[in-house]
Structures are given as structure tokens and as C-alpha cells.
Length: 280
Image 1 (cartoon, rainbow, N blue to C red):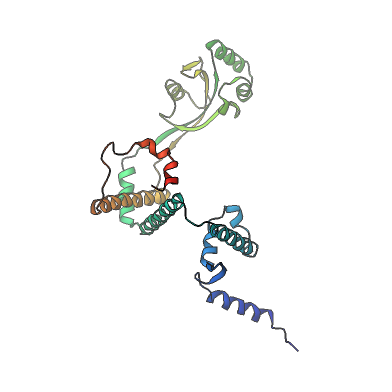
Image 2 (cartoon, rainbow, N blue to C red):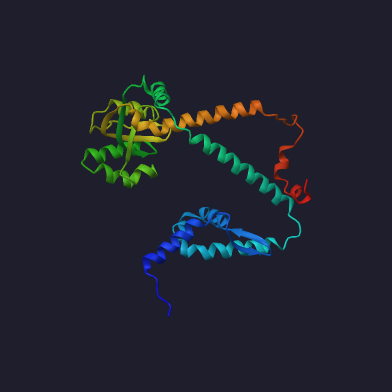
């Protein structure tokens, strides 16, 4: 009579088996070609995000079937087309270059380098005045004057904006433009906003290249320069990117590189797919 192992012991056995397996372990063979666990792991990692969220027990057989089907199809080709060989070369070059960049990105950025980058970017930065405004944009001055009269008569700014504003983005939001800093809006729109008191509205239409505006200043605030902690990740990324560019310049300087003479290749050849069929 066969005794049933306790569930805990059974799971422990599975865990031991899983930990003993390696990426090089062969899961299946097709006409002598091995399909390894590592190839299945890579395939799963390259799936669209919605499929990666599926549990492994759902994906395992599907991925294996896919690789087997790809291999039996690949085996039907007697010769590898030149375009495929070229694509494989490009893919290998891209993957190896990506690994080199990843290695450089893993290098930790020192606190001293971060502080130096922060000081360079923000040491002399002044507080920035920001505005939150709404506007109603129309094509003619007469239309803008009519809008002013409606608002002065007590109609709701947001409702009038939704009805008549030709700015599709802000019009649907009741005219709201959200927050913006000085210099982000065209003149004389910016100048008109800067002259308004909070809650105030332009007394006459403001003309720009977009048409005629009726503007209301909803709020103002002073935006202080960000702290080091607030921009730490961005600065670290910039520093790492700078190191990569420096390293690329260094590597190119050390490498033996030959480039074509000017005019040796017609740029239009890039669109000539027939060259791939010829294998040249």
C-alpha cells in the first residue's frame, strides 16, 4: 500500500527540485535542437505586460508550444535568408550594447556628485511666480466684447467658456488653463495675466495670434526651487547619462573605426529591400 506524503513534505520536494534546475536545462528537443528553460524564461520576459501577469502554470505550456512550433517552422528552411542573418547580427549587437550600458547605469552616483550637479542647476535659481488662470477665446473683438458683457451681467465664466470658447482644450474645462509659470504664455496674454489681481478679469479683450481672449486670474503662487531630495533621481540619471556619453567618446577614440568617404553610398539605398534578397 502506497503511503501519501504530507503536503508540506511534498512542497519541500518541489522546492528542492526547482532550486536544482538551471537555465541550461533542456525542456524539449525538436529534431535534435534543444529548447532550454532559459529560452522559455526569456520568452516569458518579452511577452506583453498583460500576459506576463498570468500565473506561470498558465504560461508554461503555451510558451513551450510556441517555441516548438517556431522550431519546426525554422527547420523547414534549408538556408537562412541574408536578411535574417543581418537581423540576428543587429540583435546581438544591440543586446550586448544594452548590457554594457546597464552595467554603467548600475554604478552608484556619489553624494558629492549629486550635490555638485544640484548646485550647478539650482544654486542661483530664484523663486518662480506661477499663475492659475482661465480664459475664453473667440475669433473677433466683437465676440470677445459680447462675452465680457455676459460675464458682467452675472453669467458663469465656466459655462460661457464651454459654450463659446474656440480653445477646445480649456473650453471643455470651463476655460481653465491650470498652473503656468511666467514666460510660458504668449505676449500680450502673459502681460495681461501679470497685471491682474487674484479673482480679477480683463476689462477689455486681449488680442494674440490665436484670437481675442477674456482672461480671469484664479490664483497665484510662488514656486521655490526644488530640494535636492526632490530631484535626486533626475540628477542621478543625468549624471549617469553624462558618464555614458563620456565613455562612448572614450571608446570611439580607442577603437579602430573606418567610415565611408562622402558620397560612397547613396542614402536612398536604405529603402532598397531587394539588396537583402541578393545577400549583398
